Amino acid sequence: MIATQPDFRIDFSAGMTMVRADDSVSTVYTRTDHALYTAKAEGRGRLKVAG
Image (cartoon, rainbow, N blue to C red):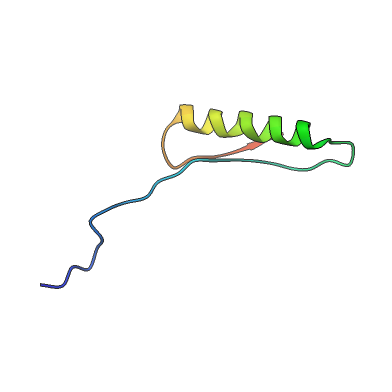
């Protein structure tokens, strides 16, 4: 029998942010990292956008 659905599933959470003109690499990373961990805390399959 040919399976039409895979036997596994991939879920992920992600954090995103906008890059502002006065941002440093560190501030972009920090906002994105915070958004990622907020998404993870809220459950699987989440996308959080930092302000």
